[in-house]
Image (cartoon, rainbow, N blue to C red; front, side):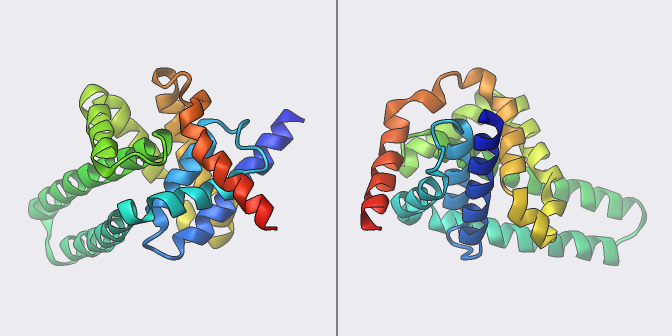
Length: 209
């Protein structure tokens, strides 16, 4: 029964996050909200969509510009790789692709770890606090920071197939990253301060109905 509850919770979080990602500027808060659900899936039971929406509501003004930056980074990355592959050849092409891979991987590491920090710190955390936590993760645990990002990027093909993206295209990469981080984040999902804001918003949403 517990497995069924967790599966439905994760599926609900994925659908909510996917729908919110369509707004582009709400993408990063949506991923952070899904991260918050995965951090303690048992506590999020029946509240997953509200938690994702609460994350967006509480952090939109803080993180919308990073959502836009991530979208621009993705478009520029795809265009850059296609251009180098099409117009360069031989060793020059290999070097160009390698340089681009390193540059965009660094950007992806920063964004992925910002999402992880935003989804595991209390929602009212300031941008400076989230960025400080992001850099702490990258500098103290570079292997985990890069490894978790690579695992998330490996799931990128899922985002190109709508049924798969809707079903688990967001929760799967977040879940893989969670497996990398969970051993050094013991108790993060049980932090009352972390969850109270989401619970209050969920209760308020319930009263509205």
